Image (cartoon, rainbow, N blue to C red):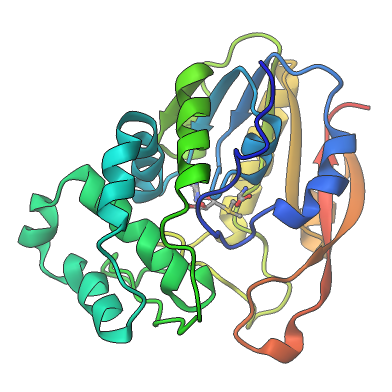
Length: 278
Ligand SMILES: C[S@@+](CC[C@H](N)C(=O)[O-])C[C@H]1O[C@@H](n2cnc3c(N)ncnc32)[C@H](O)[C@@H]1O
């Protein structure tokens, strides 16, 4: 399948891999028949590679639903997005839709997906953040000209999702990795081990990702290895993570820290790329 340059992330996502693609692609296996991404987020690598067979998962059901709507109803989604405006009052009114559980449950998948894309484009730093009650709580971003309706990208992603064989799921990553075909390649981009106690960002979904979760993830990677499945994993280059994956190949790459509420702390940070193959 020929790659379409318009296929790109439709959402800004914390830890998005867009600016790391140049470092990640040379480390991929030469040939990928089935691509699997259990923590897809914004899907920067998925949309860059545009594999013909893919298993795509994220525990964030709202996010996966956005991809499902792009796949099945992109024109209705584009039409729904036209209704939103980049104004503070409008932003907070739409953000509050999830405070009224009954009303929220009555929305269509298209309305919900449009809301997520709109909030993502207009909220501060494009942060998808929910509070303990699962309610979206990022503030208004006050950007001059956010691209709320990016129709060319939405249409291109829709064509990709319909042309390739892409299975979308919203499960815990372990579940999504259970039945993979032989020769599958797995790219894992989990919530990162915090580089300092204050840098921890755990707001992707209710509940965070603790060090015990990181250990559980490493055990899962060990399991992939023993099944003969190739994997590549990104994480922050903390001593803890380097110890966990000491048995594997580790490359250090530099990433720009895109999201930090303290702008003086935005700079280059080291990340690991772990692989169980040469
Ligand atoms: C670092 S982000 C992925 C970034 C992404 N690769 C990109 O390029 O934008 C991590 C993702 O893991 C998801 N996640 C967190 N816990 C999970 C779990 N137990 N199973 C599956 N996904 C999970 C979050 O919802 C989040 O979207």
